[in-house]
Image 1 (tube, rainbow, N blue to C red):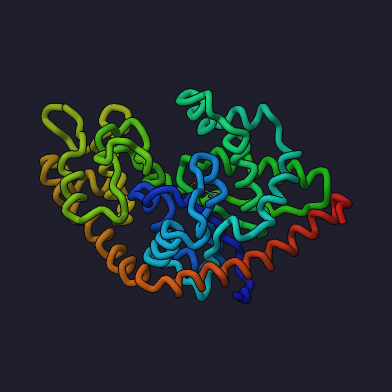
Image 2: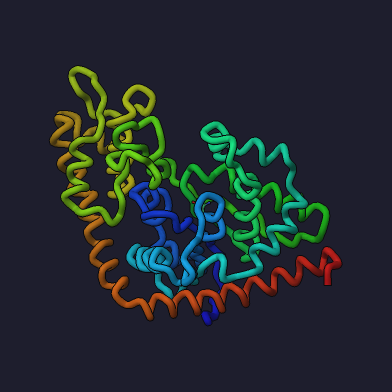
Length: 338
Ligand code: TRP
């Protein structure tokens, strides 16, 4: 079990459904290595959240290959298990307990206004279960159980975190100031990467057109091809300028470049002013492949050692459980549930 130094707490999580994408990387994972210097970090694998859309049918589920892939990818992005906690959400029962308590502090109207939920409803309104509706309440439990000071997420999760803050404030106004109100850590550029063939929608791991998405474990030559074939805008003469409304294709590629190289978009616009789309794409594809190749090299290294990955989850479970149990106790106590 880890013992913590006195630092602010950062919490983040990703669902273990399918493989992670460049969108996940630019949205939050790219900052994981460095953020550990400033924060005590909790990295959650949010498997209870993925129950909302996917059925678990593997009897050895909790250490199934999907989960171990995630642990190996977390490590490959620089998470250091000797300083940070990596854990599986379903291993820590306190999350579902706090979830129920918090569901008493959020209104039907508030959850109905969540855009992610509304989109799901539009897409398929016959198989919407309660958990899809109450999804952000479980996020609230995840975050608030750990006295979290800041949450690192992509732009698509911003609305959920705003609701988490509201729930915490509401609870605090009735009971003692039990919860810390977390800040949201979101980059303005790169936190929302769009689909390569349709840059008006988000890059998603569940897209049926695989050419829309760069997966962190895609073969390098496949990545080059996906970038080469990505949709750019049909303006004449072609210009490399950032304008997401008028030129969503090239703007998306500029965002990826900016995010991976930590360079301002305005600098990139100047640098590539006289470039053709094809030469810009070639340089971008080198940048992407370079980053992803390094991740893949360490992924191969970590993924081979399953015992090590399982140990990380076991130890993460102990630390997360121990830490969150104390907080849950306080919450039970203010509610007179002891
Ligand atoms: N909902 C997040 C996603 O789909 C995953 C998640 C679950 C999360 N709990 C969280 C993210 C708590 C941040 C904090 O990406």
